[in-house]
Amino acid sequence: MDKQLKERKLQFHYYFNNESHSMDAIVRNQCETEIISILYEIANILDVSVAIESEARQEGGLRDIWRLANSNAGILSVIVGVASIAIPLLPKSDSELERLQKEELRLSIEEKRLRIQTLKQQANKDKIEPKTIKQVAEVVNESHKVITRRSNLFKHLCAYSKVTQVGVSELDCHGTPLVPESLIKRSKFKRFVLPSHRLPIQTFDDATIEIIAPVIGEGKYKWKGIWQGQHINFAMCDKDFKQSVLSQKMSFQSGSTIRCILKLNSKLDPLGDIVITGYSVTSVLSFGVDETPKGKIHRHQKKFEHAQLELFENA
Image 1 (cartoon, one colour):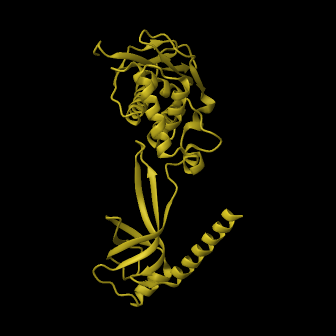
Image 2 (tube, helix red, strand yellow):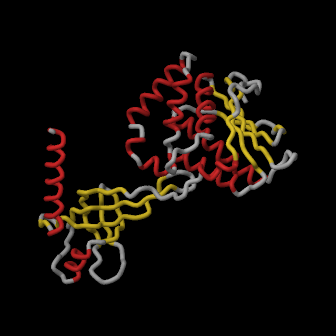
Image 3 (cartoon, rainbow, N blue to C red):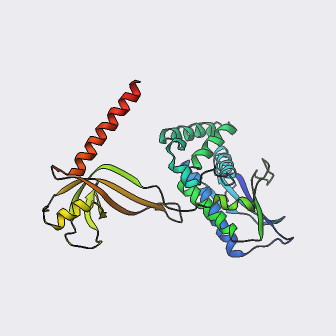
């Protein structure tokens, strides 16, 4: 590693149920992959580059140490400091995924940007406040990729009974601990594992889809259309509209559109990326310029909800 670069270290300490100093190579490699991925994701969130190298393992259970390097010492202390907070950060009473689904618990994009901007300013002056690191740790803790990688990490550990607890700590360039080791007991491991990778269903109340290929026969075939410039396959779940199509009350031609309520299903893949798993139309509100009965009900309901909201705001 270039000696011109500043260094900071992260230690992950495995505690065993016996006096040995070894562990299954595959499990250790899997855990290392997840931890390194978390470190790189933190750097990515901060929009900085970092070099990571592994040091020779140490005993005392088994300790893995990674040496991080960057020209800015302040940035390094942030990345390692945030990682040492985020990895052992227990979820609240809700599951991690449920916590992300609750809008009131999520930081706005602007708030995240401001926190990272403040941190970078402090890093350039080499005057980073502990409060700032904690605030950035909150930003990182809402990253799908960090949550997924941490879930993967503790899922591997749950399946390996030899590990009784793990510790995370931040070290200086000489390997001296900068803060007390954060310990996670085995009884807490499962709390970090996502119960499901499914994300909440997104609903678009006024989606316009250009129909490319309608399904005019029986069966659970997918319709094809264009929505927001993207080609999509979707399930038509509006039984009344499907019946109208089957009875040939609706005729499609090039450029035909429907205005509808569209549901989008998605999940997190093993890397923490969001993958769309399907689209479905639950109600067709209009076909071309012709409003459907469900469209009229939907419009009146929206007017009523808007009126109720105005009454509440003016009360």
